[in-house]
Image 1 (cartoon, one colour):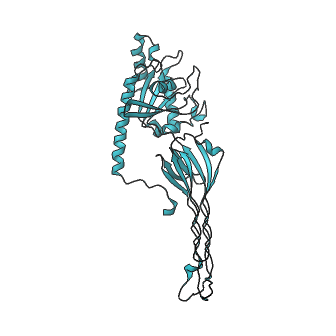
Image 2: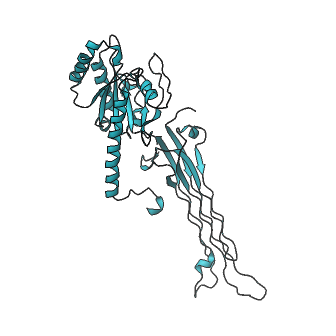
Image 3: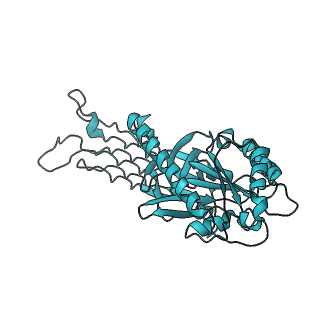
Length: 356
């Protein structure tokens, strides 16, 4: 299935049913009084985060989702049938915006999480509601209100703990194949990765994290060069970025390439540039042993790097165990910190138009 991470849809909630004007008519009860029932409420539209979906491609074929309207009330104080709600399945990690106002509506990050995006109309009132001591035969009633209509923009950001960043052919896809069960395409030419890939890495039986591989960046990506920067948003939810550098490509300066990546990253988002980032020097096995320490020091000095540095060979699977376990420790520490912060804060309220 084609990978699609943005879509626009229209949602229409059901209209409320109108109230009924009716009077009780029976042979031996000549003045039975009003008995018109209320209408039914209109159905609402909900988005539901669903496991197993990893693309918004379905919304390229169906763009309008409409809930059922409420039925009108009837005599004998019969209330009209309420319209059925509809649930629209979206991938976990979908962010929802109003397409006309750019208002942020909600973020679906947990499987089964539901978000109300269009409230159904309120039912109309039958003439029974208007009966009083001074109005014995009311003919008033109200019509049901219209349901909400909205144009929505859906934006999917993959949920991963770790993101891979680097030039094309830096070895990102090879790394994710080596440490997880994911099988992205690998070839000896640039841009073999055309869309994000996710892999689950298991450090131990009950310890794992998710890593995301996105298409490689090149200089000028912010201006549309290569595949551009449209996939960088998939790194915004990550706890850690691994900056892969190919140290063995003839004629290429690893420092220049690394600086180009950081420039494009900063042009896209300063917040992304400030995320924790580790330097991973790949294809180290292709260097002569007496050149390895020199190359590592040149890169560290050239970048003014002060963070963690790992030397690996993703293809030969050298140095991967240390990298995986250090990542696992970092991710678990971040999870614990986030969990503690969540318990200390008030729960985040999900957007619900009925409360406004």
